[in-house]
Amino acid sequence: MAHTVDFVTVSTAGLESSPVADALAGLRANEARYFRTKYDHVFTTSPADEVPEIVDWVHGILDDERDLEIASRPLEATEFVVDGIRMAYVFYESGLSINVMYTLEEGGKRAVGFKLSDGMEVPEELASRFRFARQRSKLAGTIRGSFFVIKHEH
Image (cartoon, rainbow, N blue to C red; front, side):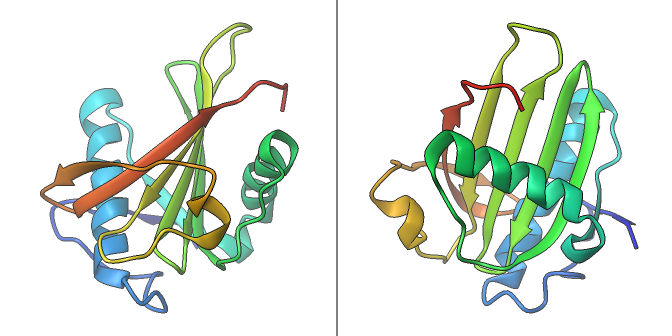
């Protein structure tokens, strides 16, 4: 069942099995605040097993574009369209968050972003392939992020 992510009162609901649940909840709340502020969009997530089509779309892009397979179990996912951009997020048990930004208009920006929750190690499958920059967040502590540009149609 989908639930609205509250960025004022941060909750670990749905993320309890993560060893960095508090930091992952902060990361999820940080994304919710961004979309509420920038697009007036209410960020909702669902248990990953209830929305396999979202997880499959994200995993299909990772496989097709970079031959990547994420080892961690997906906990939650969401998908929505704002300002002509299809957005998808998957939050993983390890503390990893992957987002896909896919502009619907031909020739628009399309990319995959990786964010690591505070306190987690870089996943082995990403460590040798991506460099992670640091940013600070009041909700999520230190976030490390990286991305790649999507080259094919999905």
